[in-house]
Amino acid sequence: MVKLSVVVPFYNVQTYAPDALRSLRANAREDFEFLLVDDCSTDGTAEILARAEREIPGARLIRHERNEGLATARNTGLDAARGSYLAFLDGDDWLSPGFYAKLVAAMDELDCDFLRTDHVRVTGRSRSVRRVPVGRRDEVLRPREAILPADRTTSVDYPYAWAGLYRRRLLDRGLLHFTHGLRTAEDRPWIWRLHREAESFAVTGELGIFYRRGVATSLTQIGDVRQLDFIRAFDQVIEETARDPEADRLLPKAVRTYCAVISHHLNTMAKFEPEVGRKLRAMSAGALRRMPQDVLTEALTAMGEDRAGPLRRLKRRRPAPAPAPQETNAA
Image 1 (cartoon, rainbow, N blue to C red):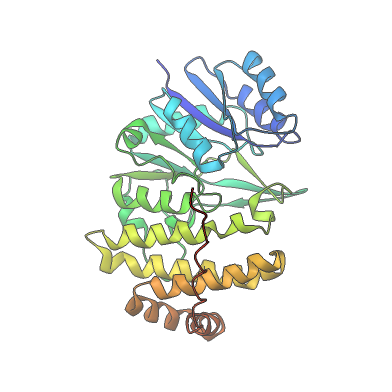
Image 2 (cartoon, helix red, strand yellow):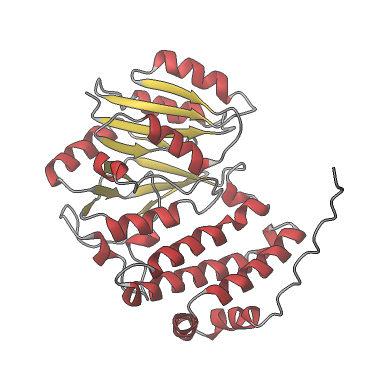
């Protein structure tokens, strides 16, 4: 019987994949499996993974015929997973030896739907600890109550799927799959859905995940159109939260977070290609107009004028005309 399935997508990370794979070997156990999903890499990653499948106990290699993105690659791994517990790791990150065994032991003891854990952020030679924004540790809590308050950083603002362990019953309920095709912010609708619909969770301070920042191929470092998928991701958060029985209570947090993320992207416009920057402004204006306007007004008032002012002006922008229909030739 497989106790733990770990889903690990890889795409063009030949420089970093060996670190991830060595750390998986140092976490191997006879009842663990490692699902290595090659998202149609075009560098040497495929060869590295083929060797890893032969050498790492429990490793299973799955290949995509075309590049699908992180969300879909994770879903591919989930569909193949056999474990009672599930976890994620990104192909450019790594783990300390025996880390998964410690998480499994904690999950066995706490008997909750999912477990969240702190991590170490690595930027070049610099390392810093990032903690789950939940004060109560090693105690079973109700996820829904960890969404609020709206004006503070909470558990849904720590969206990293790889920072935790998840029971199979969440997968069976359809709560662990990611929105197909999302190229960035794929974990935002995912973490909100978990907190709205799961029944229990806990937080442990166990450190053992090393999250590599500043990777040149990471979408956080690339200013192309894929970055704009955060609009689709947060639209989904708003839409699904609006259908929740406690929408009146939860929507202010969702809207305020969406506004903060839009503001962040507008303040980093320099990294975007010019056409992508223009599209960012147009799509952000549309997003602001789609939000529940009474909730948006309250959120902007609470944000302060330095951040709210640009968003108010952006919302008032005249929408761009719809593109003219393409002429087609009759067959």
